[in-house]
Image 1 (tube, rainbow, N blue to C red):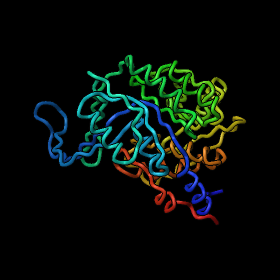
Image 2 (cartoon, one colour):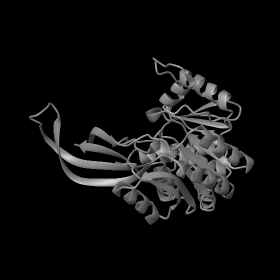
Image 3 (spheres, helix red, strand yellow):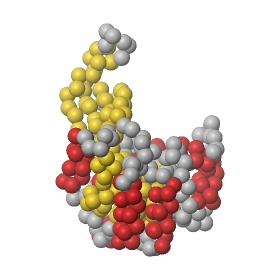
Length: 331
């Protein structure tokens, strides 16, 4: 049954009281927008005449940015470099009310910056500036102490892995053990380049390719059955209560506590940019569960939010007002 407006309002009111901790790889998303009128004489590539530039918190910082649309109680944990990009990223998070007490500035490390170049509203190239070195000492020990002290004070803990060096098995084990001990909802967006064990996590949210890769399965025909089998394997392996697979234009696949597969068709009307759509899905699904929703209701809300975000250009978020405006009328 579609989400009713009064039910959405009740959930949104509950969201505002939740305290969320986000842990993961931080980055700055940069977008260069321009026009293309000729090819380069140096190589068969377009020349983009840049007309404007925009920058947004990305990676785990975008999860925090999404959460802040619904609750003011968001703490972000991660690392940046001691460079202008790191200063800009932390400063922009402070401006929107994010608690940055869990962010470490690492001397000599560059802040991850992803630059996407657009011409004629099409992405032409992406340039990544980063290092994937592990979190060094003493920052690593300080991070572990921070997590031990602070996890019990939150209602939900979201882990966003982009395989940029922050997360390893010891850190993930600590997050899940402390979260379980304190009775908190834990949710993770895994990465295939960082093969970690997520045993005991409450929510796992891979996309299609991640679910297949993590399960070791192939899907040459791109069938939903293969994705269902991969999702079941991951759920059995790690014992997660809820497994939500994002399927792009095909919507989402949900496996609940009984491993029953449920398909949620996409809510997107037009797709301009998929940057950050997975972050929005993880945010809304986790918030709804922590606020008392059943898994299917939480997935429908996540799907609604993701459908709105992909209709925007750049790393975007969704607001409560947009959710209300895009609700399917209840018959």
